[in-house]
Length: 506
Image (cartoon, rainbow, N blue to C red; front, side, top):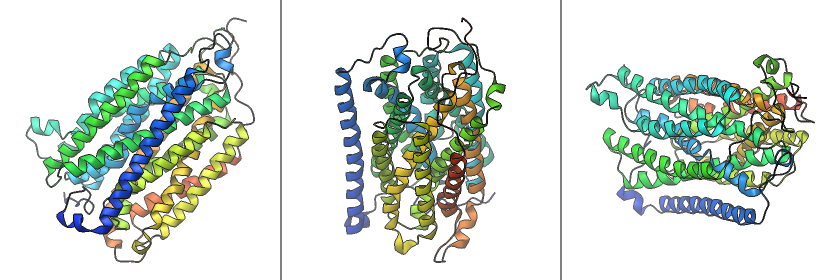
């Protein structure tokens, strides 16, 4: 099989001539300033919230724990619980395709590895969701999933261990080996995600607090992404990547440091967060399990599912092709590969924090989601028209992409909470089934796009080369956003979902 060469300068290296280049030094300085600003904002926010939380009564008994607005501290502690998943997912979508092509896999084989992980993740979400609805124990599932993620993630980016054990240089064997580790990693990731997202509806029934929990979770997602890019910038600057072994060593260090940071936050989450009540109703009465069929009979389930899938497609596909676009299509400096995403995540972090201060209603969720979609449509149009002479506009565009991502992700996830309402014994199935659709659609979309990646060089030399990368970053998210606006306008989110079952003890 003919091997496709990796993207131009896909692994940053220190070059002596670059040290004398004023533009590169300027971009590197701006990059460090942006990342430092992001960390300062994150630390200040966390410090302010924890200080304020000391003076707030966060322990609410009986029915009040479900109906009153939560204090800041439990919201922050909850947001920390997904940091390990977020930082590893950022590495997965940003660097997996780059890493696999850098070590010699073809774009199609690299996409097959990602697809195998997405498929395993998709089926695991449904399975884990059903088990959580049956037996509960959110924190046990979360801890077990986090442990599996921490153990297996280093194997995905740590080189092909089976290839070394069996002394095989076959590209097929290498692809299969990476696919197995990717599947194991994503099974653990699914267990952590479903358990963590399902906890929201069982922690509180207050709609404003539920949005605050989702918003804080999204804010820590931005912190995780900024942490990853800071780690990657340091590693790529310190460790040379001239050979396949050097490239594997780079990503191995990125994986180890990411796991360490994520595990620290997960530890705080488990120590500070109590196990939510799943089998007890709002007034201390047990509720029956909700069958799958009950959800499938509701139009709102399909609407929320479509909105969530479209939102995840926008975020994941754009993240996967952002690094390719700024380097290959716009031919920007190497620092732009980290600077542009950093701007996106800093803006998303700021917006996510601001969204926590809003008293939310159903119509507001729809309005803010549509605003995010419209921003992405405009950004997609700009990306399709950008050329190398207008590459500076990508920095401006990244600001609006960050705002749009936060608006869509926070409100899109919160729509699930309106769908679930107080149907606590069916929350994990909703989260799991929607995650299944998300993982399958993202995996297939990336596989199809990446399969045609080898035709991109044929389009170079034109003023607006419509490469697969440009379509993946500009056209696909814009179309998904357009469909998202249409679906959202048809929703009825005026009131949270009413119970689908009566109490067992009346």
